[in-house]
Length: 535
Ligand code: FSO
Ligand code: SF4
Image 1 (cartoon, rainbow, N blue to C red):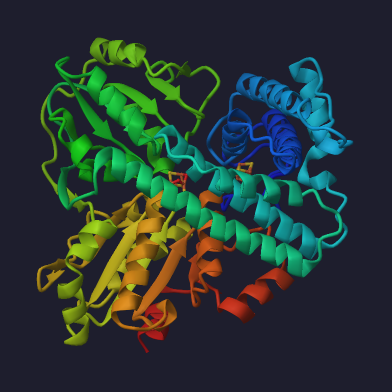
Image 2 (tube, rainbow, N blue to C red):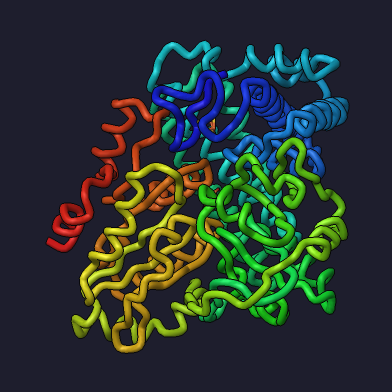
């Protein structure tokens, strides 16, 4: 295997087993599925040119791609089913296209069994990419990883009934483009920026999906710790799964807790109305083995990031695209097994920890106090905004973000989103004239909200985003972060500080391009970076 798609990759790439726990066989199946998804995309592009649109194939394209994103699915049998489904959908669509000779992944016949597919998949890994130019390979991988992020957002939106054929068409065009052998470096850069633009559309669709289903997030105090009684913990990013579980547990005497990226769910009016949505338990994904082992109830993973279950294998359930071999998978939205497990477990013997955090500062909430914010900037009460956002992870260097936030001066405001915030989410930073100094915008899935806040501020001050007293200090881990980074570049946003390490798939020449055109810089130390930013 060879995989270097995420931030925790082994030096030079994971080759024997993933640092994430991905096995060689799983990597081969993922490589085969990704390759075949490119073939399905080629067929969809050709079909569309002949006026044929296939909604099922479109939705499947994003589900298949999302399945290969870091920490989503580790279950080989599920990949075998996805591979067979991909080829069935591809061939059904092909039958509607006339006069086109398909080759490569659009024609590949998968092996009949898992072992055969694994052998086949090994032929389509990145290490087998015939590309001779390392920079071209780097840009194509950047594009592929960005597309994984876009697919994730498009799938989340589709789950809530929001789809856009033009977005699917662009995703499929760009997937097909990754197979092209005659793209120039400039064309690859343009394709990566187009991926960033499409990601803005995907995130906009998701924002619309979330807010039209559950209302606009509103500032909400969330209890950390536990309430005495039976319990279910929900992790991942999927709001609909949480709602379904809340409905199915009504009146059953079970308290529902959020974990990780589900924290912002407490701010949505149509979710917070359930009295048994009791609070938030735990921190970011990389701490789950410790936190889940100590949780006295059932656990539901709705999306990434899942890690190998330890002592709690019989208490953890997966749903949607997420999977781990041996963990029970619920595929029909009927969470009875999860509920029964929770009822059979002890639950919390007593109330614990009564501290709270504030969530719900998404675009609507922030813009509703835009006048106060603008006045505070004009009067000098607010000197600077920092967006300290992105993923968390296990590397020790991620302490940078905790220290950075702790050291931000009292006349500055920190906006945050995604699971990286758990490094500082419970810090009491106070407020500036009633505006909290720490504003939680939401999940990584809410990056659209952050972009809208920045654009609204730029509009209010009649300047570009780069001229605002705003600095982006980002942490990345998986491929949704790659998509968001490409979106920020597509918007022309400069001076981003990125850490804790730079992507392994970025070559020195591509990095130079990013530095020259966007002044991207790796994080250094909190003191040095704060000094440089604040002059
Ligand atoms: Fe975190 Fe994982 Fe939300 Fe990522 S839970 S790391 S960017 O998959 O999705 O922020
Ligand atoms: Fe390694 Fe990350 Fe790939 Fe897992 S997803 S195999 S940790 S690079």
